[in-house]
Amino acid sequence: MSRFDVRKAVIPAAGLGTRFLPATKASPKEMLPLVDKPLIQYAVEEAVASGIEDIIIITGRGKRAIEDHFDRSVELEENLKGSGKGQLLSQMRHISTLANFCYVRQSEALGLGHAVLCAQRLIGDEPFAVILGDEVIDAPVPALAQLIHAYKKRHGAVIGVQEVPPHEVNRYGIVSPRTVSAGLHRVEGLIEKPSPAEAPSNLAVIGRYVLPPDIFSILRKTKPGKNGEIQLTDALLELAKKSPMFALEIQGQRYDAGDKLGFLIATVEFALKNPSLGPDFSEYLQNRKWPSRERRATRSRKS
Ligand code: UTP
Image 1 (cartoon, rainbow, N blue to C red):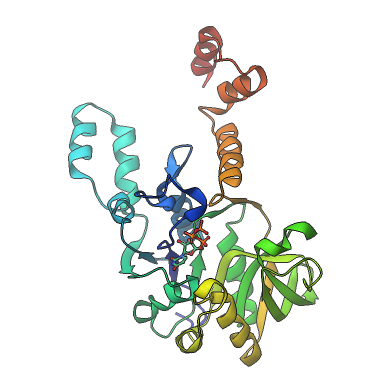
Image 2 (tube, helix red, strand yellow; image 1 turned 90 degrees about the vertical axis):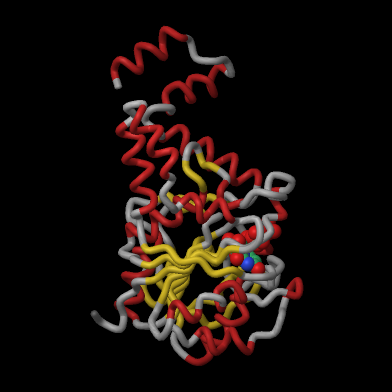
């Protein structure tokens, strides 16, 4: 094993999900389903497809459903077995074998930086990935795998970015870039939610990071910033002053599924791509009428 192998990923999931209230009052935002899988399962599958073995999920009060989702469900399995639903049974069992899961409770939602700091003991002294599960990225090469590839070549922290329209820069962390090669930039600065006039570029940080363990000592000293939260962006800015940091433009379609409109768009796109739902759903969208029974029957005979 080389010291630049990235084996562990942190998925912070202890936020309050205020943009999605009231749905998130008593249920985790991370469990909202995109067609038939909860958002957090997309993040876990992306991590696993990128070579991650250990997944540390930062949870909080009211988030028990996340642990249950990645655990065995013996009663359900018995039931599926008894009713001869073998394919569904193996799909359900597979979820609990995706990775080694660990959970750390963040007792108060003190910010994304604080959530990442909660994983320090489980990460130890090795590089690690961070995935924000509400940013779903549909890409032929998993977004995190793109970052890990760059990290292994450059040996500096790599953060995932994508271009956003100028009027949207105030919703993101924006990097001040010095271009190194096509799609790869040295991070010279980072500014959280700037106005269009202040923004040094339109390259927005989009919820994927590969970080060295040095970030933890910085996070421990990071004071609460915007909204009184310990911001990961503030710690990244400090890290960039001490060691090279890169911004990689991620290739893929990104959906901000933590936001109501973004979630709806992601739902439509994933439903249209789903082989068993797509044709009927597309017909519904075109006519705004329930697809005819005959057409559905013909399609299901063909598939
Ligand atoms: P967000 O700000 O997007 O999520 O944080 P949120 O706070 O849940 O949602 P809104 O903005 O109130 O609607 C980015 C990620 O960081 C996690 C969230 O769960 C989300 O995945 N987070 C945020 C924590 O784990 N702990 C925190 O204290 C804050």
